[in-house]
Structures are given as C-alpha cells and as structure tokens.
Image 1 (cartoon, rainbow, N blue to C red):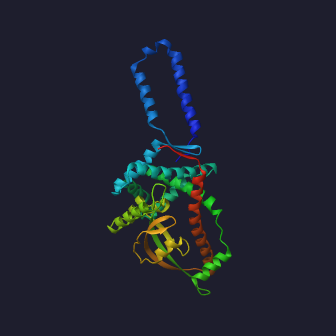
Image 2: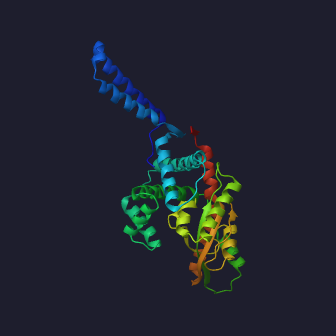
Image 3: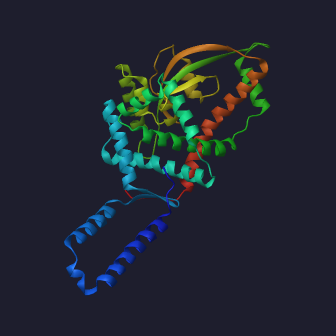
Length: 345
C-alpha cells in the first residue's frame, strides 16, 4: 500500500481544484454559459459523480484509506474464496475485518516510510523465488497457481512487498525490546536434561493455519473458523490452499502454512506442546495460544548433530524468537492504541 497524502492536504487540493475550475468557467463563459454544449455538462456531471462515489473509510494518523481501496481488497478476498470454494462472513462483517487489517498495515507502513525503509525489486524477486521453490514450483508455475486462486501476480507482488516492509519495521522495533542472557541459555539447557557433550537437537518440520481474534471476531467465531479450516483438511483439501484462505499468519500462509524446521523453544509453549504430541502427518484439533487458534500438521522430524558452541547459539536464537513472537503481539496492540484512527464505514 502506497503511503498516502494527509487527509487535509488531499481535501484541500481537491477543493482548490474545484474552486479554480468553477471560477475560471464563470469568468470565461459569463452570460454565455447557457450556450455551452450539453456534452460538456454531461462530462462534468459524470466526473463529479465518479469523485463522489469514492470516499474516506478510515483516517489513520496522517493517512487515509479510501473506499475504492477497501473494495479492491474485499474483491481480492472474495475472488480467492470463490476460487477455493470457501465461505465468507456477511459483507458488513467482512468489510470491518478487512478494514481493521488495512489499518494495522497502514500504521506499520507509515512507520516504514518515516524510517526510510524500502524493498527493491531484487529483494522482492528473491522472496518470490523462495516462496515458489518452497511450494515445489518455478516462478511461472507459481504465477499460474496465483491466478488459479483468483488473484493477480501484480497484486501478490505488492502484498509481499508490503509484508517485507512491515517485517523490517517489526524486526527493528521488537528486537530492541527483547534480550537473552547467558543465564537464560543455561537455564534452557538444564531444563532439557542433556548430558555434557551431547550435540543433538530434535527439529520438527510443521505447518499451520492461524485464526486470530480481532475486534470483529470473538473467541467463539475464531474457534469456529479454525474448525471450518480443519474440516476442509479432513475432507482432503490441500493444506496450502486452506492456509492461504484461512490463515491470518500471512508470512507463512504465502508458503502454504509452512514454518520450516522448528527447534525447541522457538514457538510459544501451547503451540510447542501441541506440536510435540502429534505423530508425523497428523493434524491437530484447534489449539489455543495467545495469538489465536492454530491447526497444526507435523510433516517430519529429524535429529541435528551440532557442536556445543553452535548449539548454544541456536538455543539463544530459539529463546529470542519465542520472546520476539510474544512481544510482537504486545507491540502491535500498543501502536494500534497510540495511533489516531477514525473509522468511517
């Protein structure tokens, strides 16, 4: 999403343009205005009508979200759901959910702009290639799959660019709030009960669907949506397609819900406990964590042989990632509360 001009500037410019146009017509035409061709009046009326059809649906700090942008995003969701045979909530509820997500995106993208962050085409293409390869596709095959899901590659590219910008902001802001001490590492290692010199870590390759609780989606609604995703999977639907439709974890959803190889301590306790209880290729019931409801599938497990030094670093990174995940939710709630947001649906 391009960072928008301020609402006051936008309105002022539009008003100035309309005023200057009206004044110029009055000066030039004078009493002969009645003689102007009817087509001119028709074109002016049609142009004014088009301007009136679009309006501001949310003011976010110094930016605005227009109804046309909201409608475009809703259309993307509807097209994707239609292509995958999914069900959507009533239009008014869907609009509220989509708009709230756009508000959170706008806040973070404004922060990215203020920090002069950017994602060039080389980085973007590299990420696209990674996503395609993780799904066992070439870039051309990935483009075909995107279109088959009711989306355009251009829109997906911009979605990924925005996602990468928001991740840059998140990494900068959240990482400053997380620290891991040597004592934390020692405590974790002692809790694992490993013997001196043992150099193995068990990793799990998993994927998930996350359904978040939002201002317009309460506990029961979130669980019901997670159960709907689970039912689709039990009926034999492709996990990647279900994740792209249902998951609110957009980073993993673009990879078909894939989390890659996960080590102990990298996920929040509720998720890790549920994942650890699953057999390979088994899908969980909806699991509640602080982030919402997860539907988890374990794809495979392996034991990694590591040196003691690298193992300590891996443990440190695992603790950091878990704490960062927890802190991210807190940070997002904070910036949402601190932002000026005026919803005008």
